[in-house]
Image (cartoon, rainbow, N blue to C red):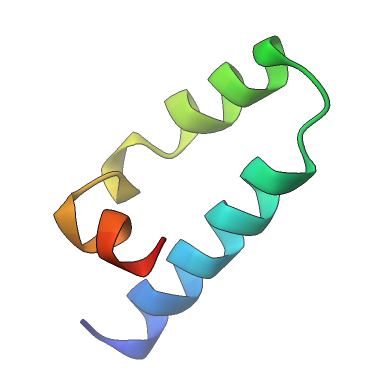
Length: 44
């Protein structure tokens, strides 16, 4: 995993933790589908 990808994972996790409701959560996940992979789950 390169540094850019790792930072993208961290940014996504921070966004998910800060979301206020289910709709916002769904929007964040849809906008970042390319980051949801096994490596992302390991980072979490």
